[in-house]
Length: 352
Image (cartoon, rainbow, N blue to C red; front, side, top):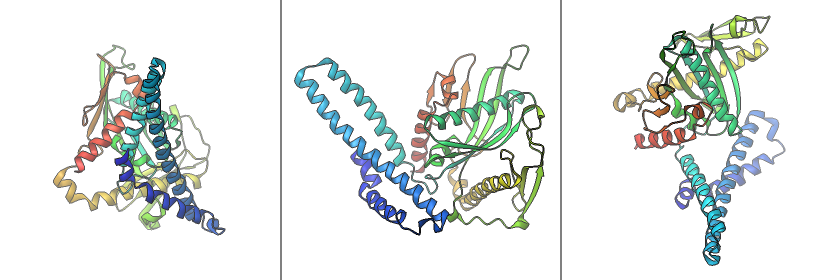
């Protein structure tokens, strides 16, 4: 806990909270709504971190007293209570330690996640939809807001692709270790002969663009197409051409959004996705030489990083960290914290 506090610099954090509180109290704060949003969101994040550290420190102090009481009174029930609290505190300290490893340039940002079905036909489309649900359930468990920006449904089952945002501090730093190709092995529910099927889905994780990123997208660099939104089975979910597809001509990057009700809203959402993709593209260009020398450790789109085996045995295994569990249904229901922690620690080791 002491080393965590040293890394996070609790004194600096408290000083920054005081400065932000002063800015937030200024009567002119909301004259610039975008700037006000940055101030209030950063203040909320730092206040939460300071509170968590102080509460955890208090729990450690109380824990010492609880063990002393159990020993003094030779009370088995109090000792069990102390040991249970020790386990809980240890887990909380581990989670806080992982947070100290999220020190990348964009790690504090919200995340933009794209999932696409790859090889495996209808099973791959079904698997892509299961991965979307897995991340949305993970966010729901933590109380994080999410926004689905675009979903392209497959004809028989599942989805061809989806893009959604996870709106929480450090969502990008936490979920960026999920980037790569995910693989599922199971008896296909879509095969009349009950054969085993291997399918693949790709996950891309991007930081949400902020005002300070200065990602300019001139109008003559994009082509905007509008089309009618559609849902599963091709059924119309919108009777007007409100869905928007934007093509960035210099890079060939294409994004689309159809989940909002108006064309204006869909265009704004699609531009946010495009800017995040362009930010990632810019970073990739800047780091091309370094990546060529040391590789990116299996974090690029298209590199296989995790296997989900439902038959002939039950296992989910991360191919980078070797972390594995025997409960794939739990993982697909959003229980991925241990995989995220292992991935973040592994990535930090690769950067040394």
